[in-house]
Length: 113
Image (cartoon, rainbow, N blue to C red; front, top):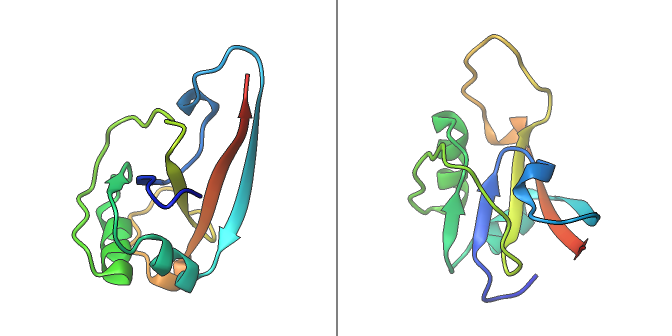
């Protein structure tokens, strides 16, 4: 991960985020809370998570203002992607998650062809 990269928060990873012709290799690595806190200190954070409750938990974790965003993310090579998901996905109900309800992953695009 490059230190001058922007940190991009997403709630899922989709192949449609990548612009590629034929093949991509993507690696996911789970992060603990302290790793997330350190990774998100300083630098630019671009958020693509629209769920206000999840964004609130992240704000409290890193002590920075982050706004919910329903935009569409498209991968840029210098981005550091942090995926935030529920440990146990819920359907059909509005959830106000706690930190322990969330799992964090750094997503690395290893190759793109």
